[in-house]
Length: 289
Image 1: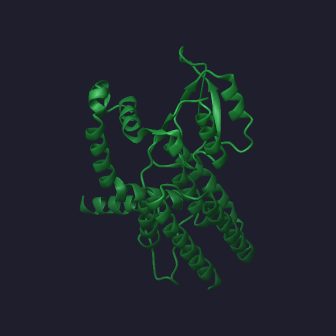
Image 2 (image 1 turned 60 degrees about the vertical axis):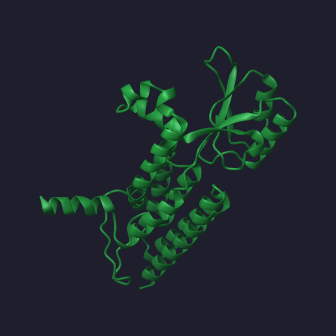
Image 3 (image 1 turned 180 degrees about the horizontal axis):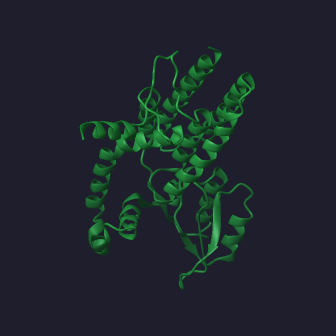
C-alpha cells in the first residue's frame, strides 16, 4: 500500500511541475532550469526510496537509465527542431520520476503499456495530440515566409530527409536583434572572423556556446548553442556587451520555439490514465481488421 502512496506523490508532483511549466512556456517562451533540476532530483530520490523499501534495485536503476536514454533521444530530435531545449530536459525529468508506466489497483487504472520507457509514451502521445496544430503552424509559416519561393529545391526533395530539414529549418528559424536575446534561446551558426571574439567566448566560465572552425571561405569561425539548454545568462550578457561595443553585428539567428509543453502535459495525463495512444490505436486497428 505504501508503494501506491509514493506513486501517487510522484504523479501529483510531476503534474504540478508540468502545469507550472505550461505557464512559463506559453507566457515567457522558456522553461526555468531550476525547476527541471528539482523534478529530476525528486525522481531519483523517490525511486531511491522505492528501491530501499522494496529492496529492489529496479526502481533507481530504471530511473537513471530512462533519464539517460530519454535525454539522448530527445536531444537528437532537438537537432531536427522537433522541440526546444527546455522540452528535452522536461521529458528527461519526467523519465526520472516515472521510468515505467504505473499500473495500480489503488488508483483503479490500468493504462495500456508499451515496450518502451514511459517517457517515450508521453512523447508519442504529445506528438499525436499536437500534430494537427503543428501541421497548421508549419503551413502558416511556409505561406507567411514564402519558404518555397526561396527554396525551390524543397519541392523536388520534399519527401527526403534533406528536403524536409530545409523546410523545417527555414520555417522555425528567425533573425532577431541581439538586444532581444533571452536566457534559454538557442542560437544557430553565427559566423565571424575575430580571434578576440573567439577568446571572449572560450574564456567564459559559464557558457553554453562553442566556437568551431568554419568551412566557409568568408569566415574563420562560427559559434552556436552547444546543448539543448540554450544560452546561459552569462552568454546573453556577453553577446549583448560585444554587440554594444560593436565587436559583433546586431542580428543573430535563433531556433524558433513552439510552446510544446501544453502538449507534453496532455500527453502525460493520457499516458498515466489511458496509456500509449499508438498502442491503443494499433490494438483497435487489429481488432477491426
